[in-house]
Amino acid sequence: DAKTTQPPSMDCAEGRAANLPCNHSTISGNEYVYWYRQIHSQGPQYIIHGLKNNETNEMASLIITEDRKSSTLILPHATLRDTAVYYCIGDGGGADGLTFGKGTHLIIQP
Amino acid sequence: DADVTQTPRNRITKTGKRIMLECSQTKGHDRMYWYRQDPGLGLRLIYYSFDVKDINKGEISDGYSVSRQAQAKFSLSLESAIPNQTALYFCATSDRDPDERGGYTFGSGTRLTVV
Image 1: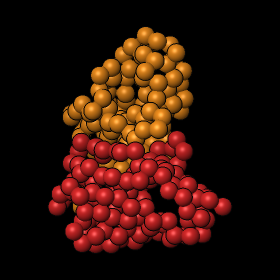
Image 2 (image 1 turned 180 degrees about the vertical axis):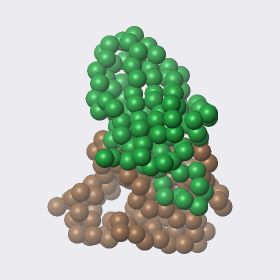
Image 3 (image 1 turned 30 degrees about the vertical axis):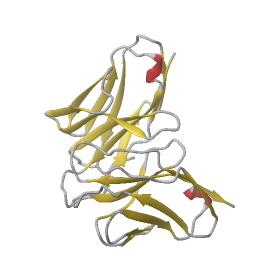
């Protein structure tokens, strides 16, 4: 799996868009970019994934640069419940599990 | 009911005791995983299983063993618990279909304390 780099922490005001960056310059052509989040000590929760195209679902949007070396997760209207650690992970679909870094601790401020 | 259920949720055990953590899933996924998480760190892979006949060691398998009793059940054992195995343990599942890249589903975790 590709090595990813994320800022250790970010703040965002409630109601504003939260933009979380991820650098994955070594990602290979068949690796998807996945985002998960972990609220307090709960199990990680899947958010969104993409390969080349931008993606949107009910939780978030994912913007992937054309060269696929970086991506941004966008939470359009952050709420206090979005405070969590967000993990960006490259996954080629192999059976050998996900490799987690330390992620970004996103703090939503009231 | 949760898609991935872990039992127990919390456990305190003594050094040297054998302990088993259990995981069951209703997702119908072939692949199952055990991770551990230490404070302030990301998750690290202990063992994973592609199907009931396939068991593989992960990054930190020493001191642990697993059993895949059925497609839906994957248990983790600590043969002789030691204090540095105090951690949060997560079970996860995923689908092996490469087109079904819907992500992994995680359980709620087991908080294990070894005293």
